[in-house]
Length: 116
Image 1 (cartoon, rainbow, N blue to C red):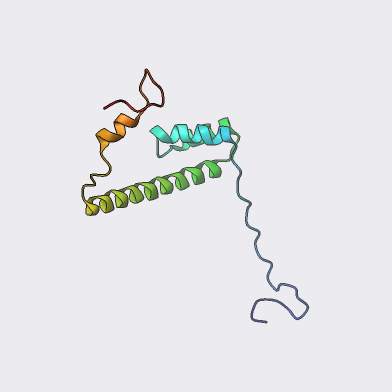
Image 2: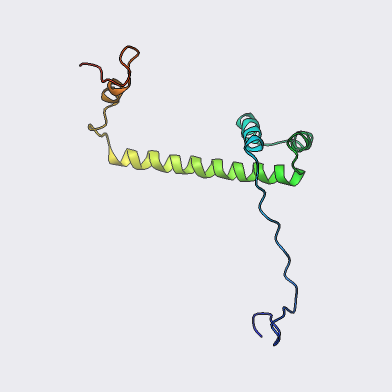
């Protein structure tokens, strides 16, 4: 048939099985994020060290960093778009930074608005 099946319902060409998604532990993610904060790209030696330290493969570390850089890029583009759309709206007197600051809890009376 057109879908690669025989008349007996068996595949003519066996489909390659896709690797399952890696479930990183919280500790692994924490350590990877910590490293990503100051180093966006890893040298092969750094990659080997991190992979061994966290019990991951080299490929998992490479992929995690690639995905994390892509996420950072998306987040920055989204933030930039938000700033641009806020500029188009113009100044908004309803959102006054000074007024917002006065609503923050003070050291003396936690949770109470400052008299003003």
